[in-house]
Length: 183
Image 1 (spheres, rainbow, N blue to C red):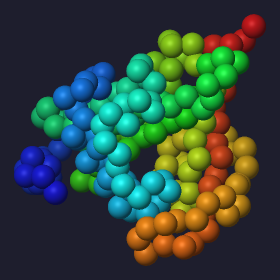
Image 2 (image 1 turned 180 degrees about the horizontal axis):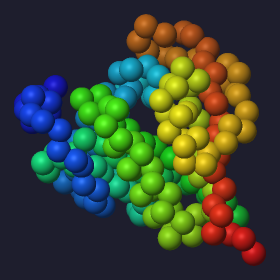
Image 3 (image 1 turned 90 degrees about the vertical axis):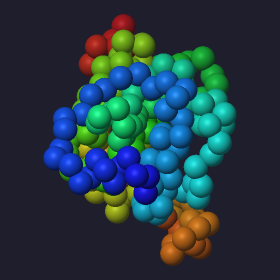
């Protein structure tokens, strides 16, 4: 854990602020992503990618960070789901909060801002695939109007950690905008 996060943990909680993600946030974004990966309940990915790969796989807009005392403690971003133009208004949600500040409402702040920014960008459908064991993430998505469309049983096998070789289910969730794509 970085010294800045340890310092933040030892002080009283300061409310976070949100801002657009900048290239300078790359190390913090990837660190928080790796912290999520290390839980084995966030993604099938076993290691955070290089920034260039992360940057290329996420939409250039709808990238938000939460900071406390100028330290990035969470982030949210969107990825396109298809290269076909008919799906330009559909995006996949990624939202990660540092374990050092879980339970402080940061995920809700990020999701609220991400939904707003996605609709301002013309996105009519948000979706996510979440391990059912990640109850906090499912609750967060449901709080913001996502519905569970279905459970994808044994969709892929973990290839790292304590769950290496284990087939995993994912809950497929989606949120249809009530203001974009109504025509």
